Length: 404
View 1 (cartoon, rainbow, N blue to C red):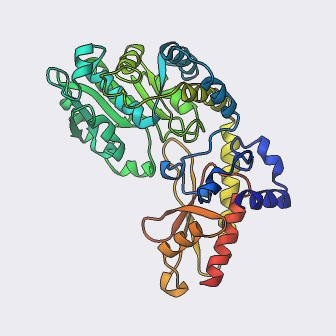
View 2 (cartoon, rainbow, N blue to C red):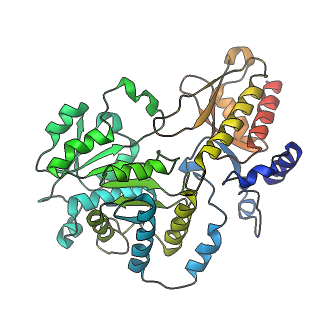
């Protein structure tokens, strides 16, 4: 039902021509084979929430499925495959080496193991017992986040710092690594807090030989953000493969210094008795992510942003026409442009709460997922949408508030 509705809107609005420009367009409309979700009694949804893992993060590029299927038909030496793909991807990034991981969080974990245990078999087996190893990871307080749990799986002590002076003083003979966010949702507000930029962190860390890991999961698009991290000498870069890149949802990238990438490989699948053994990456994911990155590196990101802005502008203009609704836009993040339309209203006057609206959007036809707004209301994140999604969203908003 969602797919046929989208097709009618695309045809009626003359938007079919956008599919050549928009790399994610209509990827969900190509329905073939079994209706696996229908058999399970599950209805797919339209994503205005963002690239959240809980709802699938993104749609995998359709052209990757055949390559995954071909990869699954043959046995292969994983080390040879990982090395070959690592070379291809590192060339696209401009770094020494790279490897496919289980998402950005998997990259963070095995990258940390590499910085703590290195390539020493004894140390690798001993983790997360860090006795006799460098056992501290320095993180700026503003960069603490739920995903740094992946760092803590190495058994290290987290040392929080505020500002450049504390960062420099925190580095000692026990410092295994510095972990930081390259960017994240809402980081436009970092200017109001003490934050040390990547280049300044590198200047502090390099003389002591302490590796710097950047969690770059929220730095895409554009691709040049990752290339710039490599160009300034970041030791380890962690990227999600299943979000804006549109590779397999379970995939990620760890890129950077060759010695650290090789150590991360030894600390991970397929090597038994390593902390990363459980983070298994299959040959199918390796092949698909390699091809997804090659595809992604060629995108016209200005054209993609132009289309997202066009969709967001249209959606906002239509929502403004609904009685009692107020709209605004969330500021862009520091390293990427994400168009977020905020919708607010007087809940008592209109007789509908934020929770009720989100439930009705998610339970209706088509199902639509939106993000909550910190104060009141909702956010429509227009980021990786098919042309026509904004028209479905506007229609549902009119229906819901007309009945309120």
